[in-house]
Length: 114
Image (tube, rainbow, N blue to C red; front, side):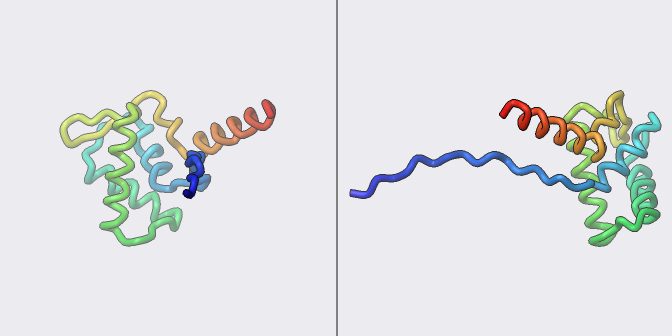
């Protein structure tokens, strides 16, 4: 009779790369303006083109942008008013530099405990 080993849960893996779409959304929404998605996407797309960070085509980028804006809305950093979006206080915390800094400090704290 074969005995089975207990299944161990693996720690989740988080990508430690810069998210250009979210960063550009944060840049556009941190102005405090209320923008419809079409205008918002236009500004994000233009900003990404300037940074040479557009890949996958405009329609794919539009979908990624919409997914990111929904994630920011669900996390309470963006307010949706009809078809318009407005960045709330603390939106800067969603940028890649802030996220990576938090991850680095958590790793350093875990190493200090060990």
